[in-house]
Image (cartoon, rainbow, N blue to C red; front, side):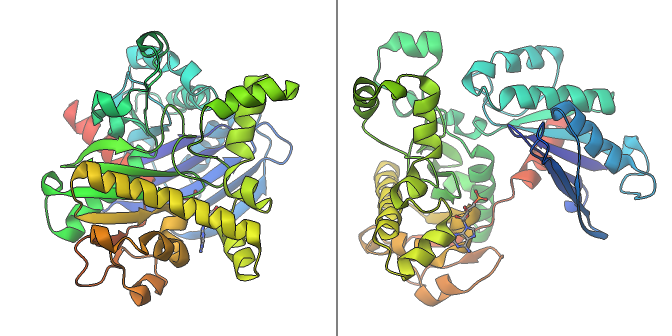
Length: 403
Ligand code: AMP
């Protein structure tokens, strides 16, 4: 039996087909630039090389249809019969406070998801279109929604509330939600396996450091706090996002510059033009920043220092609120691949019992691994994230629980 994982982003659809018995990836790919002339379709299977072709797709519905037709193509024999697909798992960016765990899609669930449109207006309508397109192409096959926000729903109220007048929470649902939940959940589960201890006995800090980054404090398998907030803008310095800033800066900009009066311009400034890119004036990509640092570029150095410092602050704070930590876990593009970033973050954190082995940290590998010294009180691990597999597992679990 197979699980198809579908991830409809604002202008893309990614998919992965898993064989559930051995959790092997059978086929995967994506369609990007939906609705634009440069739209393309990249796909690969376990038996074939990557193929890339230009495609004409007007919307998410057409993209999903094209992907499913490709998977059902008899000549390629990825799936010989539709009935081989046991479940479809949809990645959903924002479940608001309506969804605290993965759910089987029903008419009621679809209506509730529609109520989340306003909270993630770029993503949720795309997810919704994807769900309908899958239902049309694969009628009768159950779908499950897996939310990026759900893992964080265990946070206590004093951690998720903002100290604004209470009515904004009641009326507008303004609170911290947190993101990358599927990734934090996956790496925390893997960490428990590697540490040979049940999650219910562990205190962990997970650092998902990619283009978007978030840090999460996890106690006994439950999220206590996370750095992203009402939106993914809050928290550490990221590729193009500013992370934490004094909110009064917004009011100042609105007062000073007429063109910052509308929400879109302000959102673009903070989400797309800030972070590493904004400070360095160079790039949002950590590889470019590191190269520029090695060439003596001062603004790149400043951007790097700011990103590292902001992450150290969250790790230190979460160490305190957890009252000690068993392990610190690095994941995602930067966390998995950038030894200099990991080394700089862990430097001078020995007061917390965090000591990395510089040589182990430098080894290039795509495997799960320990990078702390043998004597380090807090174990430091690099664990490649696998959100698609986590969604496939969750979908299977929900399906079995609903039998
Ligand atoms: P993600 O959002 O998880 O796909 O991560 C993407 C980011 O990871 C890129 O923008 C890069 O900044 C970063 N990245 C990927 N590979 C490396 C590397 N070898 N060294 C430093 N940063 C990397």
